[in-house]
Image (cartoon, rainbow, N blue to C red; front, side, top):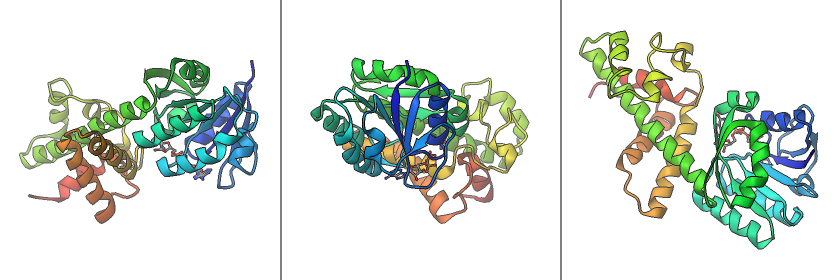
Length: 291
Ligand code: NAD
């Protein structure tokens, strides 16, 4: 049956996600700080207004401090038993803090960051990694079904964010390793196609080599073949690496490779020409540099 859904943060990701919910027949009421217009979505002028009377409120916001501010506004306006679903990528501590506030207010909460990017949001093919109670996940799952193709219930509140930042820490480290290996291969006079043919079927294979090869003209179509236009921007990779390092510090975990990846992406984005480039543009970066 049609649900009333409040949707807050209708940017590159949230906009198409909200449009898909409306297209599926739900009554979607949206709020964004910026002036936006989304097919089928009724826009209102505050988060509280979007949340009032909703069965579910979905947030898709830039970071944890904005999430906390929006949650403080929205939670008092929500009806008892309704579920707050945060799909943003934020720090684990913010997810757990918002969970505690929803519980105190008699509400349900799921942290449900996504992978799949803007294409996945538009096509309704996102993957959700979710944390929260079984009851909360059960309420959110039919909506994940509309916005995505897969939802994994990872554990209690915060577990979705934990899965997301662990995955993306592997992704950042692996992309750097793949790029520096290509740059070394160049200097050793090894042909890039041969390098791909060997590594993609040997023990050095990875998603970054096999599915998103950073070398233009090699492997499947990827941002490297489009002048490194994102794709997945280097500054978003940096954001996620910072979240994993923040989590490692707060949980006292030893993550030296993640720390190095964070430092390198920070250098690339803040002091070099990485801003606005895909995160695979680490390869031309290494190409330009000797030891
Ligand atoms: P975006 O900047 O396009 O959208 C964020 C929206 O939130 C904007 O429209 C902004 O106006 C709105 N906003 C900011 N503060 C607000 C407030 N206080 N109240 C109401 N609205 C507010 O960003 P995006 O690309 O849609 O990403 C959203 C989240 O999804 C981020 O956490 C990002 O890390 C995550 N994510 C993005 C991608 C991607 O490929 N873009 C992929 C996976 C996850």
